[in-house]
Image 1 (cartoon, rainbow, N blue to C red):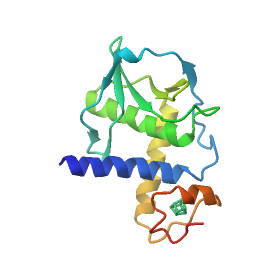
Image 2: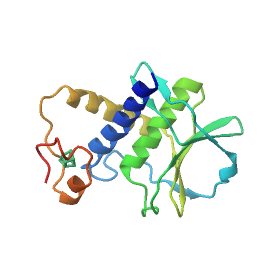
Image 3: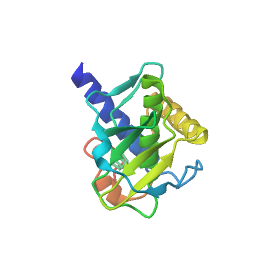
Length: 171
Ligand code: SF4
């Protein structure tokens, strides 16, 4: 069961990053994120993935913070913060917010993207939830298609891609 969940987590993350990679930034009107200061001592490591059977969605945020009756997911990124969070990072965090609400029964007002030099709070708005659900529906639809065209002309992206060995559209 653990391996099953792990595979699904990796699949979720890979699919979200893959689908979002070629999109125009802010195409879905995503929130840009607020810079915040956080106390990492309050962060609790997440032991088990969160799973929503209705969407068939699973994922494991790096940490959950409980404060004032709210549960806030935290996603750790290893690099320095970009000028504004990437759409792929925002969608990944939104998926964790959705999973927290569906599995723990409390809707996070926001999630935290933690980079090495800065933290962003991303508001989990109804608009962001709708954009995420739309993206997941697109992913499901494209999963059934025999061929999905490459969404970019960026050779550097292909060079770092985990699907490179099997992808017939790599640059
Ligand atoms: S190798 Fe294929 S899947 Fe990976 S980024 Fe390039 S086109 Fe996309």
